Length: 98
Image (cartoon, rainbow, N blue to C red; front, side, top):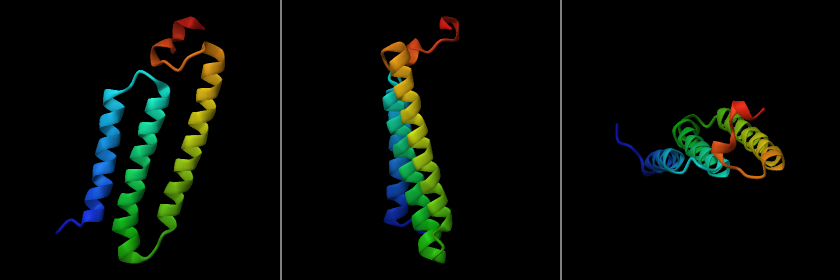
């Protein structure tokens, strides 16, 4: 099976999002942005593998809806966390501070 350039682009975007997640994990905003990059890579992978071959884009739309819901929920949690703690550091999240 010959990999197309679109498939490799989606795979590269997903791997770069994983690398950003592993290298910059101190701020919650960086974590959320890397999750969005990874979601974009997964959407591109599904779009180019399933969508171009079968023409059925319903699974891609479900993934887009889940990505939007994940982004809005993450931003809402980030705003509430910043209001409570005053920063978005992962180290400020501790169960003992309750």
